[in-house]
Amino acid sequence: MALISFTNKGIFCKQGGFYIDPWQPVDLAVTTHGHADHFKAGNKAYLCHELTKPVLLQRLGIDLPVQTLPYNKEITINGVKLSLFPAGHVIGSSQVRLEYKGEICVISGDYKIEYDGISTAFEPVKCHTFVSESTFGLPIYNWQPQKEIFGKIRKWVTDNHLQSKTSVLIAYSLGKAQRLIKNLAGDTPIYVHQSIANLNDGFIKAGVELPPTIRITSDIKKEELQKGIVIVPPALADGKWMKSLMSASTGICSGWMQVRAGRRWKSADAGFALSDHADWSGLLSAIKATEAEKVFITHGFVSTFSKYLNEIGITAWEVNTQYGNEEEEEILKGA
Ligand SMILES: [Zn+2]
Ligand SMILES: [Zn+2]
Image (cartoon, rainbow, N blue to C red; front, top):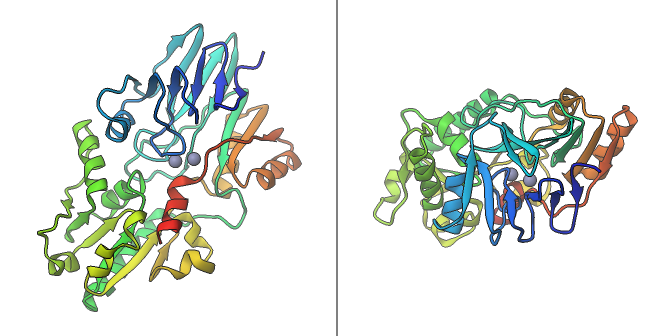
């Protein structure tokens, strides 16, 4: 019997009796990371990396039964060996490795290959069966090194200052926001929306070294914000508060910004193609590195990407899941 199956509740390991990132309530949800499409309320118990726990607690309350694991430490559940490996997607994000009677299966959740300076770097794990996302599984998606993108963001901030404009970066509160903070920290103060500040507090308590930021409160003057860098989640991008800022310049940080067309691009003054997902070549290199015999492709450009894999000799199937590219989509909805 296969070690995992795709059910109407999520990815199921029958031998172990648990689900990975289920979208309907189950007894035990192994959670790859805290983005809303991979993690739902209502499960009886959760198992995740120790740095994903603060996110779950913040989103669902402190009474949540959460068991944690560090990376590379094996536990056994009903005879199935389970361990977590870094996925490089956001702080605490994990690939789930399962082993049973010599059969190894890895469920990657969301992942990216380039080290972002704050999330533990992605680690390829050899397996027989690999489950991969394909959010940016088209050849047009090829990221620039983040060093270059951050260079552009810094230049944009300087130009805004010269024109007395407030630099507002729109970034998802889990992942992108901490990546921006870590890489933009310097002489310019960074102001963050409270949803980001709350997550940061949880991470700092859990031992993550994040540079200092200033929580945006009602008594911070608009003139002050203008001298700094402001980071807000997509939900705020259209709101009253943004309109109240003095001549704001908005910049969206999302992989979708690579294609500068349509509504995705129009709604902001600047777009930076900074993604927490692997690009086309990243997906291919990750899949090859697993040496998997079978690959299952979940959310993203599922059909195109799995067809391509079969063409190059990698046996791949499309899988229907309820995962979406939530953190990227939110940006577009909000913007
Ligand atoms: Zn995610
Ligand atoms: Zn996802």
